[in-house]
Image (cartoon, rainbow, N blue to C red; front, side, top):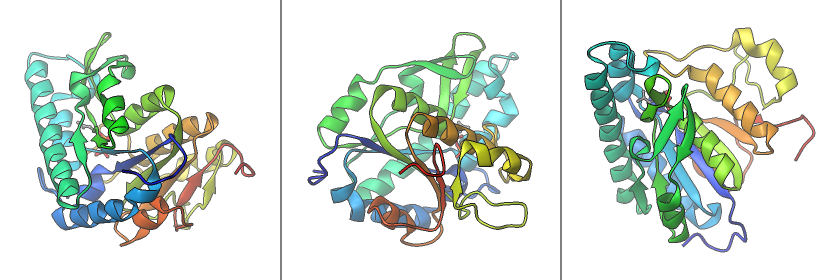
Length: 270
Ligand code: IPE
């Protein structure tokens, strides 16, 4: 299915919620963008090796999550209702994403974190990964997504796609993580693209990082970079790129150098 890459290492791709939805309009997907990204993934499938496509929630889950403060847990009488509504919103977008991938002939299968993960204090502590592993073995493309998960300390929590990827990196060898958003990468205060980011370089940039536009309960660009630095510290390189530019995701998946921010452990590692 995946061609002869000679590697079992996973490639993890996140399609950002602000890229695949219109964050200014509740429940509004961007079908043309999704169709193009799905086609780009299809074009690269023979060379990527095993692939997991995660995605954010954008204007689907974030609005209800902010209303019910779902990220803070079971905080009031409406929290249980909120949990269900946020999951429903996230799952609805997931059907749309999986539909677009199937339409582009990517053998995608939904993997709902709400049914397989548990967290404690917003960190996933367990994820039943046997089904996902079997899907990969069979040549399918699992599609998990930012979702509500049971949390042993606060009742429920939002597990972002970044948190899911972090957990996956503890369970599988991961070749790299690609975050597809709607900006070219990490931008300095003067708007210049940071081409390579390491833990050392990050401290001076931190204050300049711009937060997410629109409603976002999971932290925007700053949190994304922190997760990618944590992954890099374990030897998994990350890449943030702009999915609004046609071909960029495809080229990155094909192993070409593309405009974006590479996140590495040190500035000299491969
Ligand atoms: C958020 O997931 C999940 C919910 C609010 C239900 P992510 O953090 O991965 O999503 P985006 O990219 O910010 O939308």
